Image (cartoon, rainbow, N blue to C red; front, top):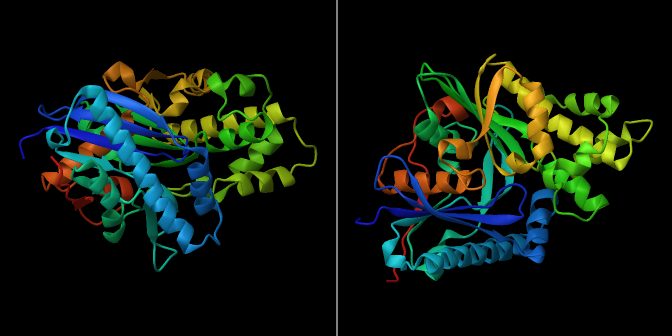
Length: 374
């Protein structure tokens, strides 16, 4: 293999767009050459949402959406190649996470834990002609882990320092944290909802895809009764390792909590309370571990100014900064991470998720689907 350039693809819990990163690994640290963000068509997004939240979805819908998403992913790859004047032969491999549509990892409560991502890598490899690495989570699950989150292994690679404790907070549809101790320790897990509930609420009541800057949430007041009801969710009290998704935190979950409130808050107060839920679950998780350090924020939530302000208020002893301050853009973090994971797989290097997901041993994550076009 002569090329050191990889492409990372990521479609997150919010399902609003495909992140595509072009990354050079000729040096030990990744160098981001380019990044694009491509909106997912409305009809395709609706199909994926049905697969996530409708437990009676039919197999034909699953098969069709698997291929349809793969075509969108391949189109994103072709676009970034065109923008950079590159040929498929100049790319070592694509690392494609795909779209999680069901995540049931509870090793202690299920005899058959599983995680399922769609976005057929065969289709991506065929359409682009580039070797594609995908299905990163299931080997960890087979080794007794949660299968998520796995990006903390990348955080360890690029953000670890012996000078101080660092917490990487990724606020996408769900929120997860990576705890990098200055003595070399690592742990990471999903804290709960990030943007997913706020997005659902504003889409329903204002027709906007998300609350830009958190302005709508900032216009409301926190409803303490609703917040306490939501914080009673058993997931928040589970020990790590743990992971979650839309299977739990979805519209039905929110409607169930609202049904328990005798006096219904205004829509903007509910939005403010949903933001407070995200902030409190993140800050409590951090404070349960450390009392000071650096908090590095990435994901779409880093662009929510009111959320960032609230996080600063909740963690006054911590220095909070966007990940771009350390060289990786907030929006492209996960796409770069999956390019890195593809690199590890192609180099046949096991990745150690044991302290993150609880797996029994390091694993080579991801299956390889070879390309063939020049």
